[in-house]
Image 1 (tube, rainbow, N blue to C red):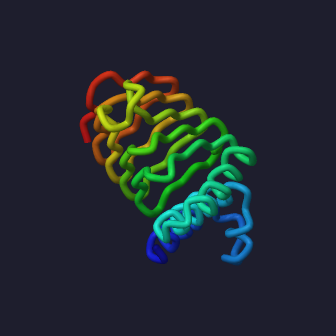
Image 2 (cartoon, rainbow, N blue to C red):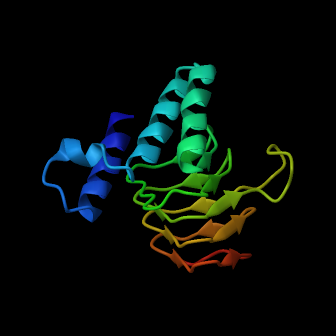
Length: 156
C-alpha cells in the first residue's frame, strides 16, 4: 500500500515540476482524487466498507470520478483532469497509467460476475473521452486517442 502511494507521488512529481516542496505537491488538486482512491482502497482492504464508501463518494462528489472499490489499480496513477472518469468495479489498471478527463472503463453487461472487464497495461495513456468497454486489453505503453471507442485490443 505504501509503495503504491510512493509511486503515485513519484509520478506526480515527474509531471508537476512547478513546486520544489513535496508536501505542497500532495496538496495539489490533481493529487486529491488519487489520495481519496488510495484511502478508500485502504479501508476496503480492512473490510471497513462503509468508511471506504465515504471516501469513494467524496471522490465522486468532489471530482466526478466514479471509481469502483474493487478495481485493481497499480501505482503511479495520473489523473491530470479527473472530472468524469468512470472505472468499473473489476477493471484492471497497471502501473504508471495516465487517465484523462471523461474516460470510461467498464463492462458491457449489467452483471459484473458475467462481464468481461477492460485491462490497461503499464504506462498506457487514455486520452480525453476514451471509452473502453468489455474484455478489451490496452497494451503496455499504448496511447488511446481522444474520444475513441475501443472495440478491439490495442497493441503494446
